View 1 (cartoon, rainbow over the protein chains, first blue to last red):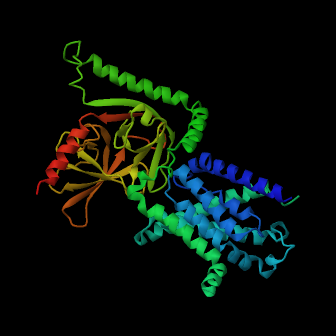
View 2 (cartoon, rainbow over the protein chains, first blue to last red):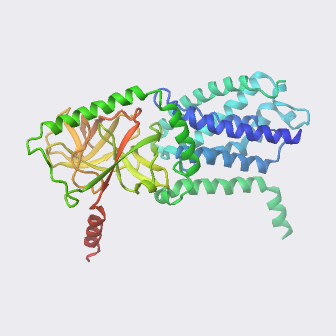
View 3 (cartoon, one colour):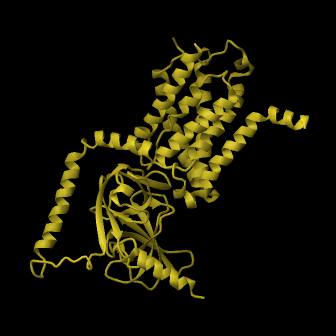
Length: 169
Length: 272
Protein backbone atom coordinates (compact mmCIF):
# COMPACT_ATOMS: atom_id res chain seq x y z
CA UNK A 1 0.00 0.00 0.00
CA UNK A 2 2.75 2.38 1.06
CA UNK A 3 4.97 1.48 -1.90
CA UNK A 4 2.05 1.77 -4.21
CA UNK A 5 1.42 5.33 -3.08
CA UNK A 6 4.98 6.34 -3.85
CA UNK A 7 4.81 4.72 -7.24
CA UNK A 8 1.60 6.54 -8.15
CA UNK A 9 3.04 9.87 -7.03
CA UNK A 10 6.25 9.49 -9.01
CA UNK A 11 4.32 8.48 -12.13
CA UNK A 12 1.99 11.45 -11.71
CA UNK A 13 4.96 13.75 -11.21
CA UNK A 14 6.75 12.69 -14.38
CA UNK A 15 3.60 12.56 -16.51
CA UNK A 16 2.32 15.95 -15.35
CA UNK A 17 5.70 17.62 -15.98
CA UNK A 18 5.86 16.14 -19.48
CA UNK A 19 2.25 17.01 -20.30
CA UNK A 20 2.78 20.54 -18.98
CA UNK A 21 5.94 21.33 -20.93
CA UNK A 22 5.21 19.43 -24.13
CA UNK A 23 1.51 20.14 -24.56
CA UNK A 24 0.08 22.88 -22.36
CA UNK A 25 3.03 25.28 -22.53
CA UNK A 26 2.55 25.38 -26.29
CA UNK A 27 -1.18 25.93 -26.18
CA UNK A 28 -1.12 29.76 -26.16
CA UNK A 29 -4.88 29.92 -26.42
CA UNK A 30 -5.95 33.49 -27.39
CA UNK A 31 -2.28 34.38 -27.47
CA UNK A 32 -1.30 33.94 -23.85
CA UNK A 33 -3.46 31.39 -21.99
CA UNK A 34 -1.30 28.43 -21.00
CA UNK A 35 -3.07 26.30 -18.37
CA UNK A 36 -0.78 25.12 -15.59
CA UNK A 37 -2.08 21.58 -15.19
CA UNK A 38 0.74 20.47 -12.90
CA UNK A 39 -1.20 22.04 -10.01
CA UNK A 40 -3.24 18.81 -10.10
CA UNK A 41 -0.26 17.07 -8.53
CA UNK A 42 -0.59 19.27 -5.46
CA UNK A 43 -4.35 18.71 -5.49
CA UNK A 44 -4.06 14.92 -5.67
CA UNK A 45 -1.19 14.62 -3.22
CA UNK A 46 -2.09 12.47 -0.16
CA UNK A 47 -3.51 14.58 2.64
CA UNK A 48 -1.91 12.84 5.58
CA UNK A 49 1.63 12.81 4.26
CA UNK A 50 4.60 14.51 5.90
CA UNK A 51 4.24 18.27 5.39
CA UNK A 52 7.95 18.91 4.99
CA UNK A 53 8.24 16.27 2.29
CA UNK A 54 5.20 17.76 0.57
CA UNK A 55 6.74 21.24 0.42
CA UNK A 56 10.04 19.85 -0.84
CA UNK A 57 8.23 17.86 -3.54
CA UNK A 58 6.30 20.95 -4.59
CA UNK A 59 9.51 22.93 -4.85
CA UNK A 60 11.12 20.25 -6.94
CA UNK A 61 8.06 20.00 -9.19
CA UNK A 62 8.12 23.76 -9.77
CA UNK A 63 11.83 23.67 -10.45
CA UNK A 64 11.38 20.96 -13.11
CA UNK A 65 8.76 23.09 -14.88
CA UNK A 66 11.01 26.15 -14.54
CA UNK A 67 13.97 24.42 -16.13
CA UNK A 68 11.89 23.38 -19.09
CA UNK A 69 10.15 26.68 -19.67
CA UNK A 70 13.03 29.09 -18.84
CA UNK A 71 11.00 30.96 -16.24
CA UNK A 72 13.79 31.46 -13.66
CA UNK A 73 12.21 30.11 -10.46
CA UNK A 74 8.70 31.51 -10.77
CA UNK A 75 6.97 28.15 -10.83
CA UNK A 76 8.99 26.95 -7.82
CA UNK A 77 8.00 30.00 -5.78
CA UNK A 78 4.30 29.67 -6.59
CA UNK A 79 4.21 25.89 -6.14
CA UNK A 80 5.92 26.13 -2.75
CA UNK A 81 3.48 28.83 -1.70
CA UNK A 82 0.37 26.80 -2.45
CA UNK A 83 1.94 23.70 -0.89
CA UNK A 84 2.51 25.71 2.28
CA UNK A 85 -0.99 27.18 2.35
CA UNK A 86 -2.79 23.99 1.30
CA UNK A 87 -3.62 22.83 4.88
CA UNK A 88 -5.16 26.24 5.63
CA UNK A 89 -7.24 26.11 2.47
CA UNK A 90 -8.37 22.58 3.32
CA UNK A 91 -9.46 23.62 6.80
CA UNK A 92 -11.36 26.48 5.22
CA UNK A 93 -13.07 24.35 2.58
CA UNK A 94 -13.69 21.05 4.36
CA UNK A 95 -14.00 22.30 7.92
CA UNK A 96 -12.23 20.55 10.82
CA UNK A 97 -13.22 17.06 9.73
CA UNK A 98 -10.47 16.82 7.13
CA UNK A 99 -8.09 16.06 9.99
CA UNK A 100 -9.90 12.81 10.80
CA UNK A 101 -8.34 9.56 9.67
CA UNK A 102 -11.30 8.51 7.56
CA UNK A 103 -11.41 11.69 5.46
CA UNK A 104 -10.92 11.28 1.74
CA UNK A 105 -11.05 13.81 -1.06
CA UNK A 106 -13.55 11.67 -2.92
CA UNK A 107 -15.90 11.55 0.07
CA UNK A 108 -16.39 15.31 0.03
CA UNK A 109 -19.01 17.00 -2.10
CA UNK A 110 -18.39 18.10 -5.65
CA UNK A 111 -18.71 21.78 -4.71
CA UNK A 112 -16.07 21.39 -2.01
CA UNK A 113 -13.66 19.73 -4.41
CA UNK A 114 -14.07 22.45 -7.00
CA UNK A 115 -13.67 25.22 -4.41
CA UNK A 116 -10.52 23.58 -3.11
CA UNK A 117 -9.04 23.25 -6.59
CA UNK A 118 -10.08 26.78 -7.58
CA UNK A 119 -8.49 28.31 -4.48
CA UNK A 120 -5.24 26.44 -5.13
CA UNK A 121 -5.19 27.63 -8.75
CA UNK A 122 -6.05 31.26 -8.10
CA UNK A 123 -3.42 31.55 -5.38
CA UNK A 124 -0.80 29.94 -7.58
CA UNK A 125 -1.59 32.23 -10.52
CA UNK A 126 -1.58 35.35 -8.38
CA UNK A 127 1.88 34.57 -7.03
CA UNK A 128 3.14 33.47 -10.43
CA UNK A 129 1.98 36.46 -12.48
CA UNK A 130 2.87 38.99 -9.77
CA UNK A 131 6.43 37.69 -9.76
CA UNK A 132 6.53 37.35 -13.54
CA UNK A 133 5.40 40.89 -14.29
CA UNK A 134 6.86 42.30 -11.08
CA UNK A 135 5.55 45.84 -11.14
CA UNK A 136 2.61 47.39 -9.35
CA UNK A 137 1.92 49.78 -12.19
CA UNK A 138 0.80 46.78 -14.24
CA UNK A 139 -1.60 45.49 -11.62
CA UNK A 140 -4.45 45.40 -14.14
CA UNK A 141 -2.38 43.22 -16.43
CA UNK A 142 -1.61 40.89 -13.52
CA UNK A 143 -5.32 40.60 -12.67
CA UNK A 144 -6.27 40.08 -16.30
CA UNK A 145 -3.69 37.37 -16.86
CA UNK A 146 -4.50 35.70 -13.54
CA UNK A 147 -8.22 35.64 -14.26
CA UNK A 148 -8.11 34.31 -17.81
CA UNK A 149 -5.41 31.75 -17.14
CA UNK A 150 -7.34 30.73 -14.02
CA UNK A 151 -10.41 29.97 -16.13
CA UNK A 152 -8.33 27.94 -18.58
CA UNK A 153 -6.51 26.01 -15.86
CA UNK A 154 -9.69 25.29 -13.91
CA UNK A 155 -11.53 23.88 -16.92
CA UNK A 156 -8.61 21.68 -18.02
CA UNK A 157 -7.91 20.53 -14.46
CA UNK A 158 -11.54 19.58 -13.85
CA UNK A 159 -11.58 17.60 -17.09
CA UNK A 160 -8.34 15.82 -16.25
CA UNK A 161 -9.54 15.24 -12.71
CA UNK A 162 -12.69 13.49 -13.86
CA UNK A 163 -10.68 11.47 -16.38
CA UNK A 164 -8.06 10.21 -13.93
CA UNK A 165 -9.72 9.98 -10.53
CA UNK A 166 -7.74 7.29 -8.76
CA UNK A 167 -9.65 7.54 -5.55
CA UNK A 168 -13.08 6.93 -7.03
CA UNK A 169 -12.69 3.16 -7.31
CA UNK B 1 18.77 26.88 23.98
CA UNK B 2 15.89 24.53 24.70
CA UNK B 3 13.52 27.29 23.68
CA UNK B 4 15.30 27.89 20.40
CA UNK B 5 15.15 24.20 19.54
CA UNK B 6 11.49 24.11 20.54
CA UNK B 7 10.86 27.12 18.35
CA UNK B 8 12.57 25.51 15.37
CA UNK B 9 10.68 22.25 15.83
CA UNK B 10 7.40 24.06 16.23
CA UNK B 11 7.81 26.22 13.14
CA UNK B 12 9.86 23.85 11.03
CA UNK B 13 7.35 23.85 8.17
CA UNK B 14 7.18 27.65 8.08
CA UNK B 15 10.97 27.88 8.23
CA UNK B 16 11.31 25.35 5.42
CA UNK B 17 8.83 27.35 3.36
CA UNK B 18 10.69 30.62 3.96
CA UNK B 19 14.00 28.97 3.07
CA UNK B 20 12.67 27.53 -0.20
CA UNK B 21 10.95 30.82 -1.06
CA UNK B 22 14.20 32.71 -0.54
CA UNK B 23 16.02 30.24 -2.80
CA UNK B 24 13.36 30.64 -5.48
CA UNK B 25 13.29 34.43 -5.26
CA UNK B 26 17.09 34.44 -5.25
CA UNK B 27 17.13 32.64 -8.60
CA UNK B 28 14.53 35.03 -9.95
CA UNK B 29 16.13 38.28 -8.83
CA UNK B 30 19.61 37.27 -9.87
CA UNK B 31 18.40 37.06 -13.46
CA UNK B 32 21.10 39.46 -14.67
CA UNK B 33 23.82 36.92 -14.21
CA UNK B 34 21.36 34.18 -14.92
CA UNK B 35 23.20 32.51 -17.76
CA UNK B 36 25.87 31.64 -15.21
CA UNK B 37 23.44 29.34 -13.44
CA UNK B 38 24.21 26.56 -15.87
CA UNK B 39 21.66 24.03 -14.83
CA UNK B 40 18.56 26.15 -14.61
CA UNK B 41 17.54 26.56 -18.21
CA UNK B 42 16.11 24.48 -20.98
CA UNK B 43 19.40 24.25 -22.88
CA UNK B 44 20.76 21.54 -20.59
CA UNK B 45 21.22 17.96 -21.72
CA UNK B 46 18.05 16.49 -20.20
CA UNK B 47 15.42 19.05 -21.15
CA UNK B 48 17.18 19.84 -24.41
CA UNK B 49 17.14 16.14 -25.24
CA UNK B 50 13.44 15.79 -24.44
CA UNK B 51 12.53 18.87 -26.48
CA UNK B 52 14.70 17.65 -29.35
CA UNK B 53 13.04 14.23 -29.44
CA UNK B 54 9.59 15.78 -29.30
CA UNK B 55 10.47 18.34 -31.95
CA UNK B 56 11.83 15.63 -34.24
CA UNK B 57 8.56 13.76 -33.95
CA UNK B 58 6.28 16.75 -34.51
CA UNK B 59 8.35 18.47 -37.19
CA UNK B 60 6.71 16.28 -39.84
CA UNK B 61 3.41 18.04 -39.41
CA UNK B 62 4.52 21.35 -40.86
CA UNK B 63 7.19 20.00 -43.18
CA UNK B 64 5.23 21.12 -46.20
CA UNK B 65 4.97 24.71 -45.07
CA UNK B 66 8.59 24.94 -43.96
CA UNK B 67 9.67 23.57 -47.35
CA UNK B 68 7.64 26.26 -49.07
CA UNK B 69 9.31 28.95 -47.00
CA UNK B 70 12.76 27.62 -47.75
CA UNK B 71 11.94 27.45 -51.47
CA UNK B 72 10.69 31.03 -51.40
CA UNK B 73 13.87 32.16 -49.70
CA UNK B 74 16.04 30.27 -52.20
CA UNK B 75 14.09 31.89 -55.00
CA UNK B 76 14.74 35.37 -53.60
CA UNK B 77 18.43 34.67 -53.10
CA UNK B 78 18.77 33.33 -56.63
CA UNK B 79 17.05 36.39 -57.99
CA UNK B 80 19.63 38.53 -56.21
CA UNK B 81 22.47 36.37 -57.48
CA UNK B 82 21.41 36.32 -61.14
CA UNK B 83 20.68 40.03 -61.29
CA UNK B 84 24.01 40.99 -59.79
CA UNK B 85 25.65 43.70 -61.89
CA UNK B 86 29.27 42.73 -61.27
CA UNK B 87 31.20 39.96 -63.00
CA UNK B 88 30.11 36.37 -62.69
CA UNK B 89 32.78 35.40 -60.21
CA UNK B 90 33.29 36.87 -56.78
CA UNK B 91 36.64 36.69 -55.14
CA UNK B 92 36.17 34.94 -51.84
CA UNK B 93 38.99 35.55 -49.48
CA UNK B 94 39.08 34.88 -45.76
CA UNK B 95 40.07 38.51 -45.28
CA UNK B 96 36.83 39.67 -46.84
CA UNK B 97 34.57 37.46 -44.76
CA UNK B 98 33.18 39.23 -41.71
CA UNK B 99 30.27 37.00 -40.80
CA UNK B 100 29.93 33.24 -40.44
CA UNK B 101 26.44 31.80 -40.77
CA UNK B 102 25.26 28.60 -39.10
CA UNK B 103 21.82 27.11 -39.58
CA UNK B 104 19.83 25.59 -36.72
CA UNK B 105 16.34 24.45 -35.77
CA UNK B 106 14.14 25.73 -33.00
CA UNK B 107 13.09 22.96 -30.64
CA UNK B 108 11.17 25.10 -28.15
CA UNK B 109 9.38 28.34 -28.94
CA UNK B 110 7.71 30.71 -26.50
CA UNK B 111 6.01 34.06 -26.97
CA UNK B 112 3.38 34.42 -24.25
CA UNK B 113 5.44 35.43 -21.24
CA UNK B 114 7.19 38.79 -20.66
CA UNK B 115 10.59 37.09 -20.88
CA UNK B 116 10.63 34.71 -23.80
CA UNK B 117 13.45 32.34 -24.54
CA UNK B 118 13.77 29.86 -27.38
CA UNK B 119 15.80 26.67 -27.40
CA UNK B 120 17.76 25.59 -30.47
CA UNK B 121 19.44 22.33 -31.38
CA UNK B 122 23.00 23.64 -31.75
CA UNK B 123 25.49 24.50 -29.04
CA UNK B 124 29.16 24.88 -28.19
CA UNK B 125 30.09 21.80 -30.21
CA UNK B 126 28.85 23.57 -33.35
CA UNK B 127 30.73 26.75 -32.56
CA UNK B 128 27.77 28.66 -31.15
CA UNK B 129 28.62 31.09 -28.38
CA UNK B 130 26.89 33.67 -26.27
CA UNK B 131 26.02 37.01 -27.95
CA UNK B 132 25.66 35.81 -31.51
CA UNK B 133 22.75 37.15 -33.55
CA UNK B 134 19.84 34.94 -34.61
CA UNK B 135 17.70 35.68 -37.68
CA UNK B 136 15.12 33.89 -39.80
CA UNK B 137 14.42 34.17 -43.52
CA UNK B 138 12.11 37.13 -42.85
CA UNK B 139 13.97 39.09 -40.21
CA UNK B 140 15.56 39.36 -36.83
CA UNK B 141 14.76 36.91 -34.04
CA UNK B 142 17.06 37.42 -31.05
CA UNK B 143 20.46 36.89 -29.49
CA UNK B 144 22.12 33.73 -28.16
CA UNK B 145 21.96 33.92 -24.39
CA UNK B 146 23.52 30.67 -23.20
CA UNK B 147 24.89 27.53 -24.82
CA UNK B 148 25.49 24.03 -23.48
CA UNK B 149 27.50 21.54 -25.50
CA UNK B 150 24.61 20.53 -27.77
CA UNK B 151 21.84 23.07 -27.22
CA UNK B 152 21.48 26.81 -27.11
CA UNK B 153 19.12 29.30 -25.53
CA UNK B 154 18.05 32.34 -27.52
CA UNK B 155 16.81 35.52 -25.89
CA UNK B 156 13.95 36.50 -28.18
CA UNK B 157 13.28 40.12 -29.17
CA UNK B 158 10.01 39.47 -27.34
CA UNK B 159 11.80 39.81 -24.02
CA UNK B 160 11.78 42.78 -21.67
CA UNK B 161 15.55 42.42 -21.30
CA UNK B 162 16.09 42.65 -25.05
CA UNK B 163 17.57 45.90 -26.34
CA UNK B 164 18.73 45.97 -29.95
CA UNK B 165 20.07 48.83 -32.04
CA UNK B 166 17.72 49.58 -34.93
CA UNK B 167 17.28 52.34 -37.49
CA UNK B 168 14.90 53.58 -40.12
CA UNK B 169 15.89 52.08 -43.46
CA UNK B 170 18.04 54.22 -45.77
CA UNK B 171 18.59 56.84 -43.08
CA UNK B 172 21.00 57.05 -40.20
CA UNK B 173 18.47 57.76 -37.46
CA UNK B 174 18.82 54.98 -34.96
CA UNK B 175 17.11 54.01 -31.72
CA UNK B 176 16.63 51.01 -29.43
CA UNK B 177 14.25 48.16 -30.08
CA UNK B 178 12.42 47.08 -26.92
CA UNK B 179 9.23 45.19 -26.11
CA UNK B 180 6.34 46.27 -23.91
CA UNK B 181 4.91 42.68 -23.59
CA UNK B 182 1.52 43.70 -25.01
CA UNK B 183 1.42 41.87 -28.35
CA UNK B 184 3.68 39.22 -29.79
CA UNK B 185 3.70 40.76 -33.27
CA UNK B 186 4.49 44.34 -32.25
CA UNK B 187 7.72 45.69 -30.75
CA UNK B 188 8.68 49.26 -29.85
CA UNK B 189 11.40 51.47 -31.28
CA UNK B 190 12.33 54.26 -28.85
CA UNK B 191 14.81 57.15 -28.76
CA UNK B 192 14.12 58.43 -32.27
CA UNK B 193 14.25 62.26 -32.09
CA UNK B 194 11.24 64.39 -32.92
CA UNK B 195 12.90 66.04 -35.90
CA UNK B 196 12.94 62.79 -37.89
CA UNK B 197 10.30 62.63 -40.64
CA UNK B 198 8.29 59.42 -40.13
CA UNK B 199 5.58 57.71 -42.12
CA UNK B 200 3.43 54.71 -41.31
CA UNK B 201 4.80 51.85 -43.36
CA UNK B 202 8.48 52.85 -43.21
CA UNK B 203 10.79 49.87 -42.86
CA UNK B 204 12.88 49.40 -39.73
CA UNK B 205 16.17 47.49 -39.98
CA UNK B 206 19.06 46.70 -37.67
CA UNK B 207 21.51 49.55 -37.19
CA UNK B 208 25.24 49.78 -37.63
CA UNK B 209 25.92 50.35 -33.94
CA UNK B 210 25.65 46.69 -33.05
CA UNK B 211 28.59 44.33 -33.18
CA UNK B 212 26.17 41.41 -33.11
CA UNK B 213 24.01 41.94 -36.20
CA UNK B 214 25.11 43.11 -39.64
CA UNK B 215 23.48 46.34 -40.78
CA UNK B 216 20.18 46.34 -42.71
CA UNK B 217 18.59 43.11 -41.54
CA UNK B 218 14.83 43.71 -41.81
CA UNK B 219 12.83 43.94 -38.59
CA UNK B 220 9.40 45.30 -39.47
CA UNK B 221 7.38 48.31 -40.58
CA UNK B 222 6.11 51.31 -38.62
CA UNK B 223 2.56 50.65 -37.50
CA UNK B 224 1.90 53.69 -35.34
CA UNK B 225 3.96 56.45 -33.79
CA UNK B 226 3.46 58.95 -30.97
CA UNK B 227 5.59 61.44 -29.15
CA UNK B 228 6.58 60.19 -25.70
CA UNK B 229 5.84 61.89 -22.39
CA UNK B 230 8.67 64.41 -22.72
CA UNK B 231 7.43 65.41 -26.23
CA UNK B 232 10.94 65.22 -27.64
CA UNK B 233 11.30 61.61 -28.71
CA UNK B 234 9.08 59.22 -30.64
CA UNK B 235 7.63 55.95 -29.38
CA UNK B 236 7.17 53.85 -32.49
CA UNK B 237 5.17 50.64 -32.72
CA UNK B 238 6.83 48.28 -35.17
CA UNK B 239 4.89 45.49 -36.85
CA UNK B 240 7.30 42.55 -37.14
CA UNK B 241 7.95 40.82 -40.46
CA UNK B 242 8.47 37.57 -38.58
CA UNK B 243 5.51 35.55 -37.41
CA UNK B 244 6.97 34.75 -34.01
CA UNK B 245 4.49 31.92 -33.45
CA UNK B 246 5.64 29.94 -36.43
CA UNK B 247 9.39 29.64 -36.82
CA UNK B 248 11.43 26.52 -37.40
CA UNK B 249 14.60 27.17 -39.38
CA UNK B 250 16.94 29.91 -38.21
CA UNK B 251 20.39 31.27 -39.01
CA UNK B 252 23.01 32.20 -36.44
CA UNK B 253 25.42 34.99 -37.31
CA UNK B 254 28.91 35.14 -35.91
CA UNK B 255 30.76 38.42 -36.33
CA UNK B 256 34.44 37.56 -36.63
CA UNK B 257 35.48 41.10 -35.78
CA UNK B 258 33.44 41.29 -32.60
CA UNK B 259 36.29 40.51 -30.14
CA UNK B 260 38.34 43.26 -31.76
CA UNK B 261 35.49 45.77 -31.58
CA UNK B 262 34.83 44.94 -27.94
CA UNK B 263 38.51 45.21 -27.05
CA UNK B 264 38.66 48.59 -28.77
CA UNK B 265 35.54 49.87 -27.04
CA UNK B 266 36.71 48.76 -23.61
CA UNK B 267 40.01 50.54 -24.28
CA UNK B 268 38.16 53.77 -24.92
CA UNK B 269 36.12 53.40 -21.77
CA UNK B 270 39.23 52.86 -19.68
CA UNK B 271 40.82 56.12 -20.76
CA UNK B 272 40.41 58.53 -17.84
